[in-house]
Image (cartoon, rainbow, N blue to C red):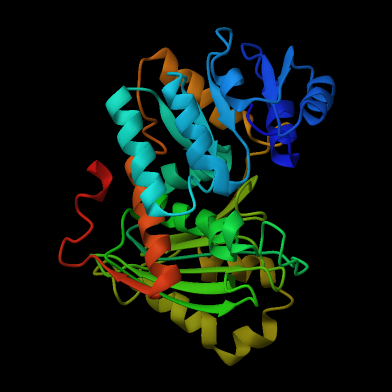
Length: 367
């Protein structure tokens, strides 16, 4: 592990749940911090030199958990040592750095993946599978929000531009990655943000447009705690996650009657409309709520997908799987998607919009 902060500790504890994984070495900015982390986490060695850790012959893969502003430098060190690397989100702080790392990983033919752990936890994998199966029909709308009240500190990593500050890079990247994961690459994006005194965004609302007319609405904030969940609506139903967005353990699935936008609307759709608005139904709703809810909303089911530990073990297992199969990229978190998302983030932070409708973003994934 490069880095010994809170996320690195959680990742190390998660590795303990994988019997075929071992924490060999940890590095930090000082030998004192590295030794303390080694003792706390049970690593065999401690380094105050990041390059020395990367060149350790007993290390099979490297997890980069240093501050975002250092990701590019440290992933480059790992790739230069020809070590498979898992880099904490955000992958980099801008698209120029992301493009450099993607090109190097592909040129050197070394495995590299952004540690978007959200995509690997069971509930999000199940969400993806449900959408792919067509259980809620064609997805028409996705909403996701993630917000925490962060005390303002101009020198801290959340608000300092030099440290990769801003709610979009720290929190919004989860919502963007989820939208990419479920709906693919959008053709247009618009953002409205509130700047912090340091100039980074303290909160942002993003709208994404897709070729089939589907929409995504994403919100991130340092100014208040939000519901921190996601909702995906399709022509045949909807799926909601619980909180937090990045590691939910429950999904709520509702399958409903096709509405007026679907050619499959029929008798049950008329019954749905009648029951939803009839005055007598409104009066009786409280007494017969459970029964009426099943009739009006359709089939409702809750899936619990809990897991032990913090949840970082799933992305670690994916790295091991890919390296074991000689894959250079994970099909769940492709390098091209990390580059696309970082390119979108650059545009949303500077001009507040991007337009790839004329094919401007078609070759991003392969650059």
